[in-house]
View 1 (cartoon, rainbow, N blue to C red):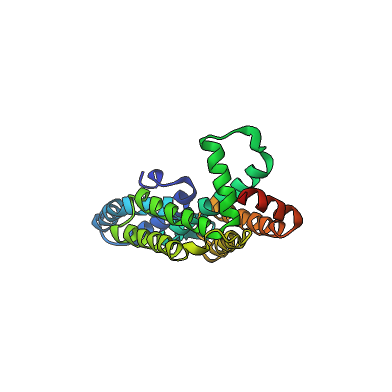
View 2 (tube, one colour):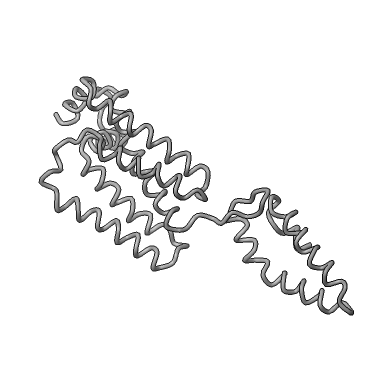
Length: 226
């Protein structure tokens, strides 16, 4: 009954472990030892369920779940890099005659952020603050630390605002993507969808940065900054 409450990919392993312990205890005189063991297992069952759901199970057992810092970093980097890249592609594919509006403005600002690295950093700072606000299940210390990092990034942008309109042609966005790729390998226990997303934006970010230094990219940069 206890095993039935566990995730399916973890259930058989835990049932075998409990069964082996109960078989050892069966040599003890009487049944109290086995009942005490079962009551102890039931008492720790909620924490075991959380561990099994938060981690990834394999044939060899349970792999620890990703640390809160790694998960938060992934949640910051994925939208921070995706927004400039999607804006760049949107500005490339959508003609200017499509008109203005909320979506069009977001696309064009994203395109500028790809060409102007400090604008991308400002977006990352704001996204970091949003993540700190939305991760309400994290500890207060973790959320304050995340918000502090977001504030530090925004302060850096303010300090260097005189350089805000000097185009770096996607180098900073590519570096941010590279940091995401490193995170996807360094924190191997991250959820699979996070690791895939981090590697995809790293490749696309590098490709866009290369294109930005070609005649096509120079022409696009002139349009963005016009």
